[in-house]
Length: 104
Image 1 (cartoon, rainbow, N blue to C red):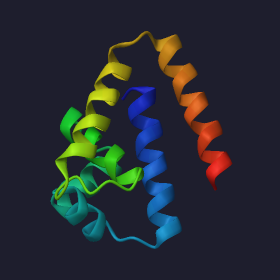
Image 2: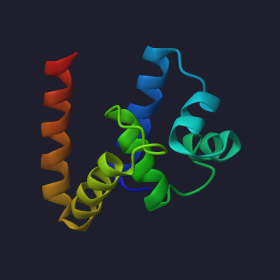
Image 3: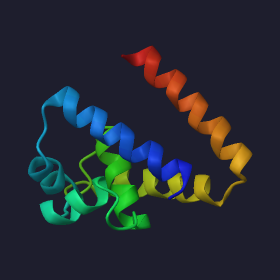
């Protein structure tokens, strides 16, 4: 699993814990099934690009199942991030961690 995907799943787990969110609630918000989300979070199946976009949108508070605009834009950014070099992705992830710490 890529570092970007691992970081994303860790952030999803952290946010779920902070919000006391259930897998069922998160899955419903993202338009996924709870069993599928469970398998993704436990690394039993590979994180597909579509699921990655949906979870990234959930992290930033977009409602991907209802409002495709924000999720689509975020998805495009994630895809561009994944196309970049490993060094560039790591720099961006470090920047995102810094920003996350500032808004908490």
